[in-house]
Image (cartoon, rainbow, N blue to C red; front, top):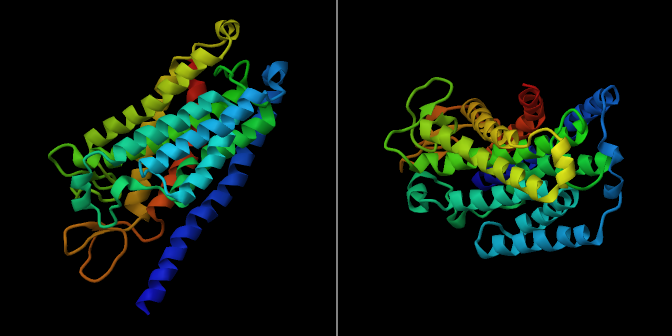
Amino acid sequence: MFSLTKKEDQRSHVLMPVFLSACAIPVSMLFWTVNVVYSTFHKDTDNHFEEHLVISPWRWLSAVVIPLLMAFWGLKKKSLDITGVILGLFMGFSLTLTSFAHLACLFTFFVSSSKATKFRSHKKRKLEADFKEGGQRNWIQVLCNGGMATQLAILYLLDVGCGERPIDFDKNYRSSWLSIGILGAFACCNGDTWASEIGTVVGSHDPFLITSRKRVPRGTNGGISWVGLLVSALGGLLVGLFHYLTILYTVDTAILQLAAPQWPVIIVGGIGGLLGSIIDSILGATLQYSGINENGMVVERPGKGVKYICGRQILDNHSVNLLSSVAVALTLPRIANLIWSL
């Protein structure tokens, strides 16, 4: 009976993220349709870049080779398992094919979050009941962290083609909206990862629950600290920085001179990281169960000897990550548009 319940629980943890990913597709399609309609009434030169209509052999080659190198590195460092590698290759291919700036966001998130996961792992082993050495990501985790960005990259390819374009909501509204959405998804995931992996093992005080401000044990879903909020913003800033540098080195200088300033991309990335961490914490404190077992470790499921802390057993950590990335990816372009209009 116990094994049957455990199997059903594991099945629900797999099906929920897949279901949410499927629901995110029509939502993002709706937002994309609204932006297409909006851009028809405004000056938009996205489709006037004739040189980007044909995908060059070098881009095809890069879209295959670079994700393969990242996958081998992930396997070697035990940051991915084989299922995560397979799905990650498809995501890397899609993002590289659309723009090297999108690849830079993926690369920054993948490398820095892997390093953050291994940061002071000896302390995390004492806090997390389901601690996994090396933090290997499987296909579910890869889907929840990169699924929204990949979906937007496919829309980017279908709408404006491939190639590097500056962020300019006046001249290139649709490509700018989609690029900021991709940046936002990765900034959100990176910021949340930094907050949970670094914030929980830095500092001398326990975090406080975002919904009640009560002190809770480290590792509690929805628990935040000032250190955690700071590093979440820094994680997003790093993604924005690499996006910015890639634009500077890959976009034609003549086009950059006519475009809006690109440095706000860094600030937008920091906002995405902080906003993603806050949304993740709110969802974690309310829709994700947290309890502490007899060994003093935080667990996500009720059971014998488990003392309730907060939340309900509706979503798991993967689903919370996915919903946070969807929310930031769909809202950050609007915030970015306001920033550039100031």
